[in-house]
Amino acid sequence: MIFSKIDLHCHSYESDGFLSPSDVVTRASENGIKLLALTDHDTISGQKEAMEKASALNVQMVSGIELSCVWRHFTIHILAYNFSLDDGVMLEVQKKQTTARHARADLIAERLAKKGFPDLLGKAQNLSRSGIPGRPHFAQAMLEAGMVANIGEAFKKYLGAGKIGDVKSMWPELSEIVNWIKNANGSAVIAHPRKYNMTLTKLRELITEFKACGGEGIEVITSGQKQGEVGMMSDLCQRMDLKGSVGSDFHTPKFPWAELGRIPKLPKNVQPIWADWAYDGEV
Image (tube, rainbow, N blue to C red):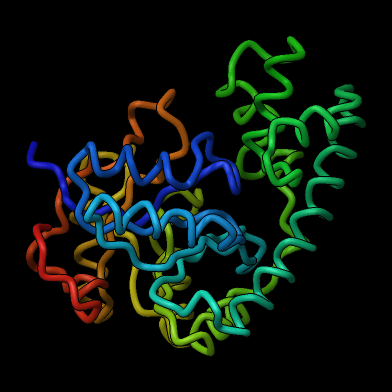
């Protein structure tokens, strides 16, 4: 397989990743990435560090963030790109999402305690550099406490989509998130569209509403896709006149199936989200 030189979806320890922003960039450079976006969950706190490192390594970076929202009781992740880091709108978005993440962590811990898993909040907070734990931090805390056999079990039984630890009520609506991104002059893309456990019909409805709100694209290529999904996402892009994006969703070197840049290239029949970003390097 010829891997992509572009990766527009990855995480550092500023959210639920396990490397520093500069180490993420270094790893991306070592893997041959030429265009990168660091997309931590609901925070831009690692952006400037990452961009300074990228400049030293001759890696082009575009600003990024992955924002959580709700659509018809589904938790949806929207990737925002190419906005100004000093934009007042995006700084306010980060503030609102940080408040929501604190409340969400408290509720996850409360729900897990009722299931017989007490005292997880402090353990999860200690695993999170920001002090705001996400579900991966709760999963790691459960593993270290001997409550589950592995991370996969934690998600399958307690933290995955539709499970007791999947808290949705704290997030803003899809339309509000997309409007925030537009007001910050950014580009909005639906992250990993096939990971929401919805039917193809429901997914088409989501994408239709997303585009009507001002959304620009969908993540056509991501790690862990099943056979046929790339073609399906490419077809949706063409049918709905949307742009395509690519991203590994890298979190940690411990997960080799989601390694930086170890994803196929965007199909040539899909217009890339980066077409207007003054990027003329390898794809």
